[in-house]
Image (cartoon, rainbow, N blue to C red; front, side):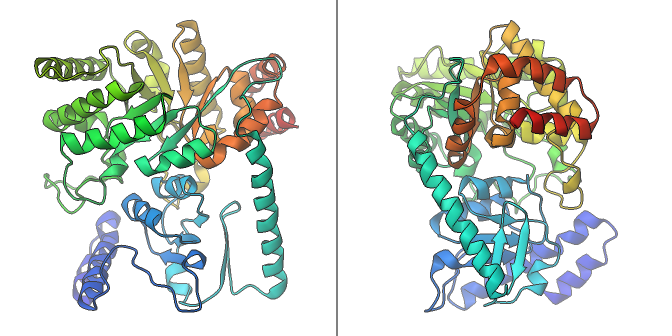
Length: 471
């Protein structure tokens, strides 16, 4: 391992140089096998330690690694690299696990057995806290638990503003096992089922029957509530087979490469398998099909043609499905937001993915801790793109939701209501917090104030206006 790491350190290219950590991770897994302790995230607690009080400290954790944590009850995790809006961080929030990413040298500085406080809200890690600090954080934890208990009273309350506007609150999920959490949070449906997370740890592509069973389980579990299934958003940091690469060329920026719908259209057999499985599951309950990372009209046309082919094959086999399954598109590229008319004329609904929209608008890799401070959901350009999409969809009478991290931020709820957003989709743990804000909001009062806010282009003034809006 040391020999190989030394070779990697000689590379001039920073991306290739960082791959030395992949070598380290592989060797560590081999050693675990040799020692008889195989398995991903197979951490065992000491006799005096409960598993749910363990904190994982690592150089990096992929989304596939983090998904594996669903089988454990780790209290938290810390990484050297990554950003607060990376897929790994998003998964941590979906599991209600405090996490701090991008701490640079945490793995080297923190030792086994040390006591840590991980403040995921503020992005702070305290090593070996003194009794006074420890007591303060225990008190904070109790206050958070009390607030959570109070919010549970809102679970059955209708999401309606003071002036009688109905709001839909949906959940984002990664696995069929997340459905109980969605229902416990009071979700009225699934607004985003990230299907790629079903299979990241496998290393092979699931067949049609296996996908069908997974989609059916979610649909039946939601008991007639709508389920929006997004086709595979593979690529970037979510490779199905990261150990293989069909190209000799290294992707220096995979976020701009062949991912999501681009990959699906380039792999028609894989795409047909997923489309057929989704269509078959649609006979068990209301399903909406969502296409990620659209930028061109021809991508929609090719997707609709592929869907027609899948429908035709099922008809030929006399297999039942929803002939009128709604098809929607993700608005997460600035080009799609600016030319949204192309999509409104071709699709049944839209869903704004704010995470990638911010990344592409501001030219910031959201998994890179070195530029994480530049990731700004309240940048005037980002708000303009969201407002333009919402206004255009309203004119065309096409439903539109927001399913990115911004939808689950209670501090942005009133802003979105004033923009005209009526469908929110977020992690189940955030639903009741957002509902609490909705129940106290008046859209007739918010709308004119938000219009004034959106005319501001100075960040300081804009944030002051938002603070006033939330007062």
